[in-house]
Each structure stands twice: as C-alpha cells, then as structure tokens.
Amino acid sequence: MLYTAPQLRVLSLLALTLLVGLGVREWRAGFPDAADRLEGFDREESPQPLLPEAHAPPPGPVPAAHPGSPPAAGPPATAPPPAPGPVLPVEPLDVNRADATQLARLPGVGPGLAQRIVEERERRGRFESPEALRYVLGMGPKKLAAIRGFIIVSD
Image (cartoon, rainbow, N blue to C red; front, side, top):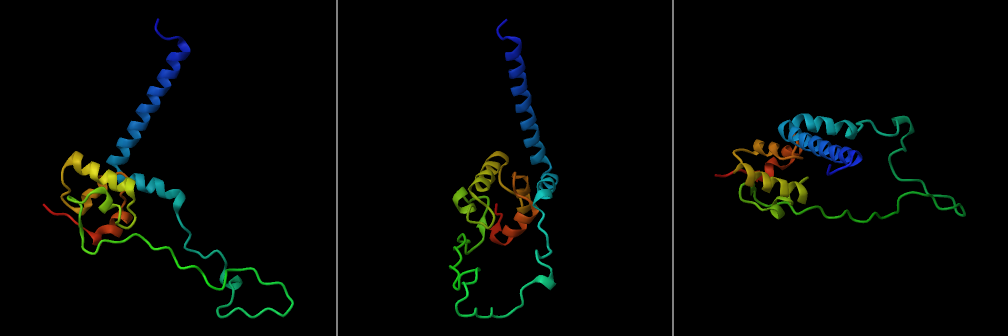
C-alpha cells in the first residue's frame, strides 16, 4: 500500500475541496445574476440616515464656544481635498481591443477584473455586445451599467 489510511483521508479531503471549489467557480460563471444576489445580501446599505431627523444637528453654522472653554471636538475647519479618482477615458473604449491596463481605468473595474475580461475574450472570442461582459466573473448588472457609457463593442 502506497499511502496509509490517514494519508488517504487527507488526500480525499483535498480532492473533494478542489472539486467543490471548481464547481462553485463554474456555477458563478454560469449564473452571474444569482451569484451577485447572493454576494449582495451582506452588503445591503441602509437608505435610512443613522440619526433620526429629531436628533440631527441643526443646519447652519456651529455657534462659537465661550472663551476659556475647551475646544469642541469635531472635523477640522478645512478638510483636505479629496483624492483624485481614476482617469476616465475621453472616448469610449473598445472592449475587444483594449488591454488590461486600459480596462482597469473604467469606473469600478480594477486590475483583477480587467485581467479576467481579457482572459474571457481570449477564451471565448470577441464580445458580441456589452451584455456579453456578464459572462466575466465579477461583472454584475450594476457594474455593467456604470461602465456602459464608457465602452463600445466593435467587430
């Protein structure tokens, strides 16, 4: 016998784990809408404000503190400027010709998703329509809607 019984159990467990992982990957690729719904359960954002209207601070300037009182805690008087976002393409980007670095500049598309788009294009051939991007793992309906104005699909 080449392997002992505990070693065979460990190898069987590893093989089963690998098969389950591959099955989940194929299911996600085959049913992207269902996968997006499942992933969105724990990310639902509450449209309600955290403070009720009655407890919200009044609009307008904050009254000045009395002399000798400790300084009020809160945000600094001048906030730092926001960090610049990704540079969006000026003209629509052809997803059948763009490389991963060009695709990564689209809103909501990072380097990983851009690489998966390129790999999917190499695997299946050119994209027939923007909706064909839904076959890419991680490209949900919201993300596709966000980039639709920045992409084109050519022959």
